[in-house]
Amino acid sequence: MNRQKGVAIIEFALVLPFLLTLTFIVTEYSRALYQYNTLTKSVRDATRYLSTQPPGTKMAQAKNLVVYGNLTGAGSPLALGLTLAQVNDPVWQLAGAAPVINTVSVTIAGYTFSPLFASVFGLDFGTITFDNISATMRCPL
Image 1 (cartoon, rainbow, N blue to C red):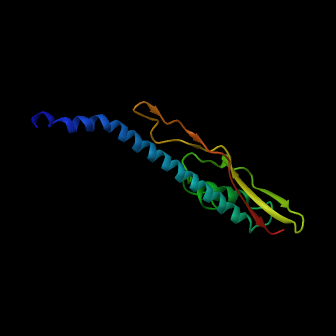
Image 2 (cartoon, rainbow, N blue to C red; image 1 turned 45 degrees about the horizontal axis):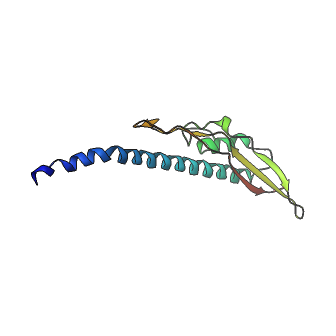
Image 3 (cartoon, one colour; image 1 turned 135 degrees about the vertical axis):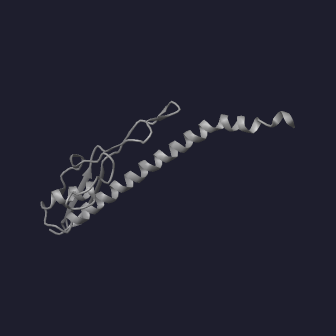
């Protein structure tokens, strides 16, 4: 019995790096998913806003809505590193045959997620570049 007093602390010391690495991986993946969902919601909000406007108008306000979450462009970006240059100009187009409908699309292109921790215990997290995030909605002719 006396020979096993320090076994638990040694086992804990051996397992701790794996537990910490797993914790960091889950945390960073969760942050990336949260930022992706935030960007998706902001693109939908901008598309919804433009769907109530005449085609070809309010494009700067829609871009501000995507990046800053408001029409004026005040405050900090919704996602770390997101800029107005990453938001493509909104596109209006006619679709369908009978009836013909007008749609508007808003897209974020080239957003890169940067983790808080570049590496943990030699495991490099790198960066994640999201595919284009876009939304299309019907709008009046």
